[in-house]
Image (cartoon, rainbow, N blue to C red; front, side, top):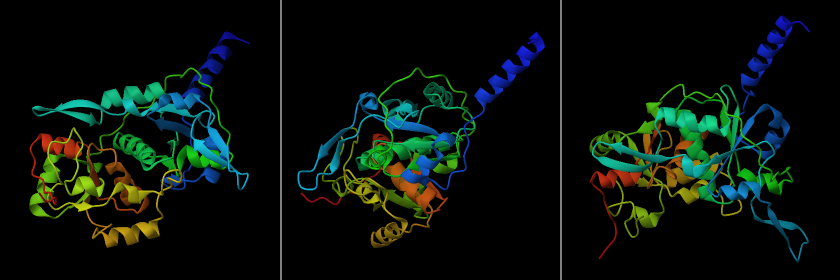
Length: 325
């Protein structure tokens, strides 16, 4: 082969390797059957906090009565899935005079992190969490929200995560291969989905934007608070939408169906179509309600307050408490 042909072939291979894996996703949520049928057309991002379980083996236990295998420990990953360490998804940043923890990284830092995971520009992404608990599923929504903020559009979350994949008999791997750096680029900073403290303060004063507190009711009423939250209770005027209502119970952490969500929000006095800001303690749980309201139920006027109660109370924002002495 002539040298010119070799150069051309090499160039073409480089171009092919830099083109993202692309599929048309059916929506913000996909199920196991869809992923099995389209697994070669998407890039799977496996997000979890206990990263060691990525390379372990799942544990099943036989039911003595039925003889069926029951999943008791989620481990391993879908073959080819790229590992995302949830612990590296958020960082400390200075806002004004305060150091705020668990925030979205700066644009270049986030881009560098996602490239280190191995994601390429143009990839169609399916995000997979362990799927055993509500907290697992909101790790998926936090990654989804972060990617969307910085410009990623073609992506979805696997409903029920790895737990549903294993229960369906999907292939599982415990091997870890060397990651090739990706060429993904942060192309935007979408402030239309990010609420600031000023946005929240304006909503408290004007009452023209609905505030949604997604923490457990014990924290909402001020009976209990996290150590990094500096005052009891909730932001004045906020309505409580406990995050546990967004998914099924442990072991069956699939997202609640839209028709049920509509009934739940109505019962809680929440207008699912209104301009809203969701918040929690640190911007983790709040991405769950943001995701369902915005991406699943179609309300595009929803923001997520990244600093949430940690930032609000550190800045000495006003709170309301319902507890009694």
